Image (cartoon, rainbow over all chains, first blue to last red; front, side):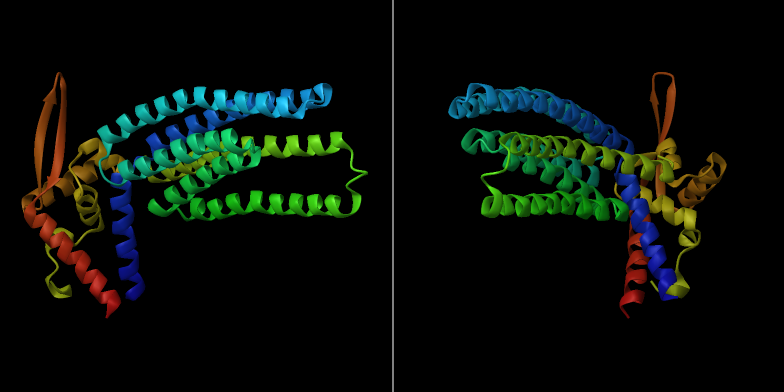
Length: 231
Length: 94
């Protein structure tokens, strides 16, 4: 009896969420975002590759860091235009179709994407010239969007995926940290500079591409859920 | 409301689904069909019955050559649906 009532309540709740949430619009939004992240990630990696390889040739570290900071800041500033356009276009679509839960999920997600995904990394790069802080902000943004969509739409799969998505880079960072510490203590003199640079570049490349996988996963989940619901 | 006095309007799962779907805002026929994943015939019969029970009202909108029927929940429908959900919640708590 109790389980029947519970299933009735869950059924009513799921219909109410379905009636207020458009999987199709969100799927398209996150797919576009994934594509945007992928393209910007590739361009950012090329900029970094240039800086990394140049660093060995010029021998002027200060100039390289400055050039790198300027290039990244400039690029991130330019890349704000497509993200703002994306948010503006999709917000209009969401507002015209759904006024309830969809709109405020979209508002929270777009706020996180614009401020944590674009503006905060921009300031992080400008202030400390740190790739990792900036990249982790972007990874965090994708994880927050994943968790938000998972919790609000009662999508267990997406919710669990967000935890794994966030734990993975942390685990990788931890392993890198241990290796770095080991090098510092025991073998700092013998470590090849080129190896450290390659290592850093691969790490930076992975973090830049990681958000696009995150947004892609959200889009895929929305697509599957929408298909399940007949939407 | 108790289990012996649940109105006829809430006796089938599809009618409950329809009221759940329009509870937070009006919906047209096609949107309801998409949300609930039911056939045209089944949906239109249950919508007609709910309208007869006084749980919802329909408005026919014409834009150009297209006709669209929009369904919205009535005060009575809202009240019995809220009472029903409350009854289910209380049953779990007790």
